[in-house]
Length: 318
Image (cartoon, rainbow, N blue to C red; front, side, top):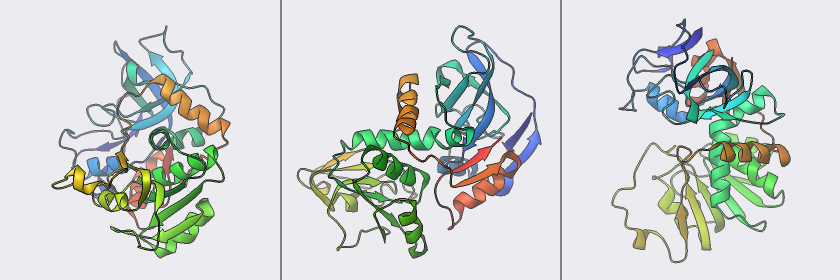
């Protein structure tokens, strides 16, 4: 089969398109013919050598959509069945989705019933599963004013689309570090868009709910811009920091404000995945990818996602 193999850490140039043996099915595992996959920032971090547990050579990819090709559990899966896989140790402890076929633990293969196209389905797994988890954590009211920090990211745009699917009249604002991207945010569906980096402008806010995708570098600032009983969901570390130094909750979190998060790696289940896919279909959420590449162009997909021009979800169709 053809796959994208990384033999050592580095820039996008280390993503090699080459022929490798197709994995053989073993007890407890299922072989999936990959139709498409999303490109994620965590895969860029791994490629750069910032995932200490990952040893090269490795086929990256923490998600994939496709069809069951062969399985060790014929009572559980059917050949040709549409499936999604996300997270676990995919693309880390074992080879991931950047390939024509991927061998996955049976417990990490999630059959889905859907009429979405392969491109739409490839846009959804990690990004929309994360955004859907964020949405549920916010306890959203239709009268809320919501802010998305790092709104141009795949999860940022997906969060806005899911919120608008839930309640088209809910006001959703988005931030970007680039003035050039503000019009694109409005065109994508945001009601408001403004420039912000580490701190929000004093004339913006307060907000009832804030989705902070930048992470530890901005979350303490986000908490200062909440209405009473408002919620900040901090999911993602696009700011490049993993922890908040000397975090002291009583002084850092204003009275009657709430801080939560969502990890797509915890308690993934068939029911949760199907719930997310069904929500996208039933609420007519626009799951169109921002940019589509082919498998041999995976290096270009990484380059685009790392560039200042990147906007929205980037996928690869196999």
